[in-house]
Structures are given as C-alpha cells and as structure tokens.
Image 1 (cartoon, rainbow, N blue to C red):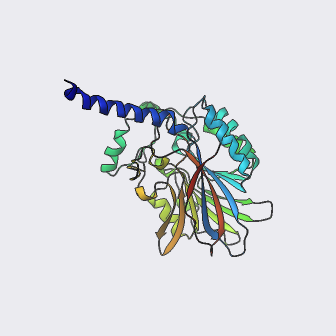
Image 2: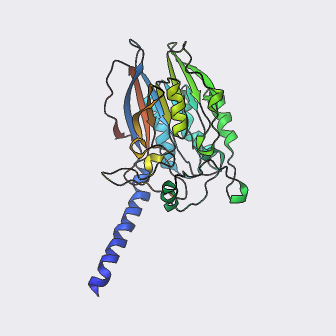
Image 3: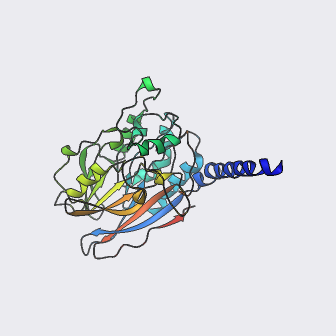
Length: 323
C-alpha cells in the first residue's frame, strides 16, 4: 500500500512546495539587474537608464510598491517604462504612488495590453498549446466586454505621466534633454501584442541631430524588431515576456508569449535585419497577471542599463537584490 501511494503523494507534495515557493517567495523576491551596453558615441559620458516593466499592480501589493519607490535611490539619468502597469482596474493610484519618486526624473513610456484591458483568467497550459500552433496570447485580437474582459482606466496613468514630463510614445517620436544637454531621440510604438503598432508613422530612422536614439515597445514581436533594426536604431527596449515567468532551472523559458525565440526572452541580446544590427534588451518585469501570481526560476526585476561608448566591451549581465 505504501509503494502504491507513496510516489504519487511524493510528487503531489513536491508540486505543492514548488507552487508555494513560486507564489510566496520568488514572486516577491525583487531584483535589480545591471547591464552595460556600448552604444554611445566615442568620448560621451556613461548614461544610466532605469527600465521598469510589467508591474501588473494589484491593490495591496505593498512590498512591490515600496521596492519600486526605492529604485529612485539609483538616481538614473532617465527612466523607461515599457508598459503593463496594471492588473487591477482599481490599482491606478497605487501604481502612481509606487512610481512617484521616479516621476521626479526624466522619463518615457509606452503602454501594453494590460494597461488598456483588465486581465482574464486563462489556463497557463493554453500558452503551450498556442505556441505549438504558432499563436501568441491574444495574437492580435482585441479584448471586448463580450469576452468578459473589462477596460482599464489607463487615461489616469497617461495624464499623470504626462504631467510629470514623461514622454508618451504611442506610435510617435519624442525627445529627452538631460541636465547636461545630452539629447536622447525616442521612437515608440503602441502594443504589437494587440496589433496597435503603426511603424509606418515613425519610420525613417533616428534623428541624426540627437546624441543617442532608442526604439521602445512593450512586446518584442519580430516585425517590430526588424523595423527598428532596419532603420538602424542602436538599442531597442521591450518587456512583455515576463522572462518566461515559469522557467526550468538550468534550461530556461518554455514560452515568450510572442514570436521572439526563448534564448532572448530576457536580458541583453542582439537583433539583425536588413544588414544592420541592434542591441535588444527585454525586461523580465516585476509582476505577474493577477490570476497567475507565480514565478519560478525567473525572479521579478528592474534593470539599470549603463550606456557606454561603443568602443567599450559588453559586460556580462548580472542580477542582484535591491533591498
């Protein structure tokens, strides 16, 4: 009798322990990742860029809120928010409270699908099925009330970000001027995951008068990466993937929730198109959908990117906890 039931009970116990760890410990084990990217002209001083992404705030997530507030202590030159701030239509005030100290710095933002629409429960196994069929999450389908997905009050986020001087980049261009006069040209897209991206509106390449140009988007779909790279943007910043969220130790992510390959699901990599090469940084983000509040072998994170002159060699990305 012991042999008959011992193995299933053991497997069940291990599974329950993994879920408890993924939800109760790792999903709240916030990290700061530091990455060096050699994309600046020779002789320019390093620029420190803080990227936050996929906050997916739910009311009452006080540890996440305090951790995000603490990031202001890094004193970045500017902040990039790559979207999906919400996972609760009531959480707009808490997102703004969490990001309040960072709003004192220059910044820019794009939105993701979860900023526009509230989350809906989905069986996580469906992502594996969709991957096998060449589909990716919403796959360009616009959520609607008919499917039980409600609209989020994203306008409150937009108005507060704009009032703080952050530059909104929904299929448009913008510019940041740092205190010492350095000019950052910005080109951003609305979320490709729900086919709100309109690259022809911003095509044509970086502003040649700027000291640095960035391409910014929430979901790193290949059509977007190809377009930015073909237009010769030196660095593209994105989020959306959650780094795979539920990963296998020593193997990595199983899914990306878009059409990028799992080898580039998070961190720094490169992308090639039309004879050009761009650096790509995908943030694993610091939150989860409220209905799947788990992370395994993929801690929540923000990233401090130090941009350096291009003659410098890339250092290996390193993650460290930020208390």
